[in-house]
Structures are given as C-alpha cells and as structure tokens.
Image (cartoon, rainbow, N blue to C red; front, side, top):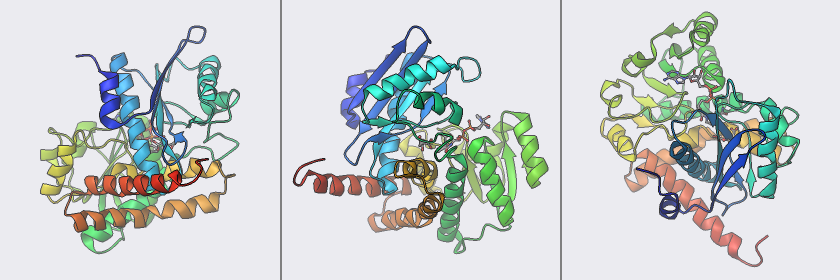
Length: 355
Ligand SMILES: NC(=O)C1=CN([C@@H]2O[C@H](COP(=O)(O)OP(=O)(O)OC[C@H]3O[C@@H](n4cnc5c(N)ncnc54)[C@H](O)[C@@H]3O)[C@@H](O)[C@H]2O)C=CC1
Ligand SMILES: O=C(O)CCC(=O)C(=O)O
C-alpha cells in the first residue's frame, strides 16, 4: 500500500514536506518540517539506501516529528525538521550533491536548519555551508555532535539508575551496548571510565574489536544482544529495536540509549512498563547532539553546551515524575512534557506581534 502523505500530515499536524531533485548531482532528498511553533525546525540529514521512496518519506516524517518533541522537551526555542537523502553514503556522496542540497535548504530561508545525522558527516555539512548559512555542526563551529550525544545519554542513564536502583553510580553494573558508531563508541568510553561492565555488538567487526581492546568489553553477535544478562540496554544503532521479537528476550531493567524511535510501536512502550522495565524516552535522553548544535546558533560555547547537556539528568527525572503524577508509561510522559511546553510557549508567542 502506498503512503498517503497528506493524510499522514493531517494526522500528526505537519507543516511542510519538500521533495528535492537535482539532475546534475543525482540528489533525491526529502525535507520534512513538522512544527515551527517554538522556532525554526532543526534536524540532521540522514543518508540511507531505502527500499522504496515511501520508506524514505515516512522516515523523514517520523524523524522530523521526533525532533519537534526533542527540542521542546530540551527547553530549546526550535521546532522539528529532518532531511532524508536517498543514496548509499559509502558510494553516492559528492560535493555537488551536498551543495545542491544546500541550495534547497537556503530556499527555505531559515525555516529549516540542517546538521549531520546517520550517513552524513561534518565534512558533508561543510559543502552544505558553501550554499547556505542554515547549517550547524560544521567543523568550524561545534563539530561532530556525537560525543555530546553520548555524554547526555550517559547522564540520562545515570538518572534512570537513580530512579530504578536508588543510586546513580553505574560502577559494577553491566550495560549492553548495541551499535558502536559515532555515539556508541563514546558512550562505551564514559561507561568504562565509570567502572561499568560492557557487553557490545556491531555489524562491523572492526568496531567491536576496537571497543573490546580499549575498554575490555565482551562481544556478542548482533542478534544475541537482546538476550544478554545486563541491568541496562543501550540501543545506539537504528530504531524499532523494542518490538514483538525482542521484548520476550529482555532481562534488562532499564532501556537507555541514543537511537531515535526505539519503540517499534507505542504499545511496545506499554509492554515495557508492564514488564517493569524502566524506559528512558529516546528523544529526551538523546538530545545532547541537538543541544550542542543549537548552541552554535548563539555563537558556540563548549562549556555552556556541556552545562546544558548535563541537564538531561534532571530532565529524565522530570519525565519519571510526570509518569508517576499522571499514572502513565514513561514514553507518554515525555510526550506530555514536550506538548505542555509547545502549548504554553506557543500561546505566549501569540501575544502581541509575532517575530
Ligand atoms: N550522532 C548523534 O549525535 C545522534 C545520534 N542519534 C541516533 O543514535 C543512533 C546512533 O547514531 P550514530 O552513532 O551517529 O550512528 P553511526 O552510523 O555512527 O553508528 C551506528 C552503528 O550501529 C551499527 N549497527 C547498525 N545496525 C546494527 C545492528 N543491527 N546491530 C548492531 N549494530 C548495528 C552500525 O554498524 C554503526 O556502527 C542513531 O539511531 C541516531 O539516529 C540521536 C541523536 C543524536
Ligand atoms: O545531532 C544532530 O546532528 C542534530 C540533531 C538531530 O538531528 C538529532 O538529534 O537526531
């Protein structure tokens, strides 16, 4: 069945979807702008080989809505957007492709600000910057946001441990880390430095080997990670990893990782709750990269960014408090927290002249 784009936009209140095609460079991109109530839509550019154009559009739609919630929950004055470029990041990149994309971003005149995401790099964003100033996370600015995302996930994981075990020390605890890319590697470093035991996996053996060598991690095959004996599961690869197949295997007590859209469907969040597994919602715990690139918009100050990202600890505790207050699962509590802010600040911004 093909995707009914306008129906989907109506259902979840999207503002705009832009299809970008450039013959010379081969660019095929989808820019999705979900909501700009709080400010311009900021969100990275993902490059991926999608099975179909519908899959690509749906990914852009879902990810951009996640960005609205992420920015709102993080207390940022930004809305939600995301770009998907259809292509193989290992083969299809070129200066022309990213510059063509940059011209589309420029055409939106600041309504959408881009950055890197899975499959794109700081270098790619330098090409985008040649055509537009509406790009963050460039080498001459805040650079790769991934170490900051990892720092925020580590802080949020500690808050979850505090809630579940009464202590935020992860020393001696076992953490299962799925995906040892930009974020997963740095997360392993924070955890190893604190004395946590690591069980890790990745589809690229060289990434696994590096973490085993550097941090004394134990490696398992990709499919085995879901059944590992560990207090905490940190998904740092792709989304939808909490699903009907994986859930029955879980012996974890906490799920806290960097991946976006961790729950395949909302009901999987209900099932985690029913099993007594504490879920630190994805868009709250993984906001470190967004907070970092957003700081670049004010003239980047690393210390200020680190301070703000450390606030993810309190933000995660706030989500758990709302969950208890309203007697709802944590994934819903995170949405309530974000929606409350969009509603309140949206009303405030409607007073007098809107800038
Ligand atoms: N980089 C950032 O600052 C942010 C990243 N995220 C999310 O965090 C996740 C990780 O991001 P990055 O580290 O930047 O991406 P990355 O592409 O550098 O790393 C992902 C890693 O997961 C591995 N992987 C893919 N499928 C796997 C599987 N089935 N089993 C095991 N490993 C698998 C890949 O080989 C790769 O090493 C993504 O979902 C991303 O959307 C969210 C917020 C910010
Ligand atoms: O971290 C980035 O590059 C920008 C923010 C983003 O796209 C994300 O948090 O998923």
